[in-house]
Image (tube, rainbow, N blue to C red; front, top):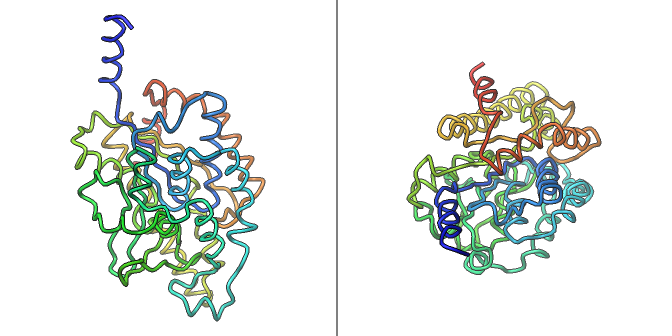
Amino acid sequence: MNNKEEIIEKTIQTAKKFRILSIDGGGVKGYFTIYTLKKLMDEYKINLYDYFDMIVGTSTGAILALLILLKLDLEKYCREYEEIPNRIFSKRLDILSQTRKPFFPQFDGEELKKSLIEELGDLNFDDFEAKVKKYFVFCASNVSNGKPVMFASKNFKSVNQKHRKELVRNAIYASSAAPFYFEPIKSSFTNDYFADGGLWANNPSMVGIILALADLNLNLEDIEVLSFGQTYIENLEFEIKKIINFDNFRNNQFSSLFSSSLLVNQNFDNFCASILLKEHYYRYYPEQNIPNIKVSSIDKNFINYTKVYWKENKESLVKFIKFGENAKYYKGVEKMYN
């Protein structure tokens, strides 16, 4: 490489944004994201591990973040997402068992725990971080004291580092233990219980932005975020009504309140990230109501919608990834205000 080429290379490296990949929670609807990520790698030869400097994930987003960080086979896991309802969400607890556990879990979480053990074993966070060599955050919730939990790179000094004592598999389960679906997991070294990070950061974009600003000495203009959502979240109310064992009146009231709180939570994070980063924030997510959609099952309608949405939006998505151009930004901000 001659001097001119070295100067050009250094200029490109200097001009490069700090790129954050943010992946929402959403159960098996994570198929929407893993299908798209696989397509980016297959059709456009985009190396996701090399491209992003930091990956943040919540719930199923934490699982997908883990796949990228460990460079696992997305083709294999894309197929597995279609089969998850037959394994992870197959064993339903009876009503008596549900009432004896926190948050009335509908499903036995042992299959999820078993899958995580098979993939991660007893991997701890120090070894995990040495292996992945990337900034990362997995979001969960401490349901014993009402505090947010972030299993994160040790560079993030703002984060309570004591949670790194947990095994990685327990952290991922904690991030994925959605209330009414799976029971919380007890901490390995305290009496606290952890549950799904979607209770406070279903869209973890702002988590990534804030930690990058606070602990990595970056400026807003240095940051670029690609945010993946899994589902049109208003559909959650349909499923929550099905799984809470209360009478119809209380059921409808509670499920409406719970799904509305998730909707406000997710949209507010989306709103904040858009306002802060403007065209340097790109949100890729289902933009319409899909009838009877569920977090615990996947059907042909959702699979077909995922493929159609990719075909209609891939050029816009790739343009953002390669050139930082975001034609959807102004449309997105307009929708937030109206």
